[in-house]
Length: 381
Image (cartoon, rainbow, N blue to C red; front, side, top):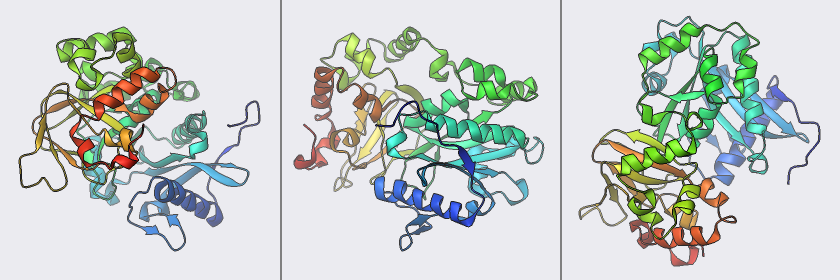
């Protein structure tokens, strides 16, 4: 339990080699030891994670009792020396007319597990936003795992281009997002903690107008905080053609009240045809429900027969919730797909409040194809 009513540790920028090394070792603890990820540029001998982008980055961090417990990396985008993967992921050519040194990329954002339900992540992000504004940055990009989209939308980031698969990280398909730092109207609309900081600076409404014209957002992907719970539920009923507790297979047997509670933090996301959403060994973090379109599931040893094909109301990715393991198969979109992304943490949050509903949900998920490939001994009761 994090102590309350105490002086909060300060957000700092690494200024010495020792500070940077402490951040690299913290990354190792989170990525390798906790999340069991495979990453290139990992130094297992010295237990540190760093890469070439760290050389030119500003590294923000928070330390607790001399130990790094949160960090975020920020790189300024240099169009003359910009990595090709950045150009592809964030459609940077469409921002070429923006003033030089006004674009940045945030990455390596992580918080120690002891503080993930505290305001620490927001404090770190606000400090990075403030520094960016002081440096004249106007657009900040990042790649989000699907289950973290809602958090970043609350900060003020927006989905705007197609998903991106980073082959160097076993995280599955990622959502490129951008924060238009001077679009104060948008920051206020999502309740962003950046909004108060924004008023300390001169803000050009033109940036928000330009972005909205360049990247018009479909109404069904409006940030969750701009819609009431009733609007979100009605939207889901319309897309499914009926009540979710009847149309979504994993919710069958649940009441509307329980279904609403479980889906409270679920969000809609679109994926183009022919994209790999997750592949074997990827970290999950979410359950995925097909709202429209079709998804093919390929499982170990089954590549010599047709895949399981999922359509509206069916789900995949249950192995993370059922057995705390990585993906056991590969999910590929056969058409453009609308997914309902349900973070595993949202389900865990309801375990104590709605134990019978969660028990029914798990029972339903055990009927999903992935359960055939999970060792019985590791399935949660």
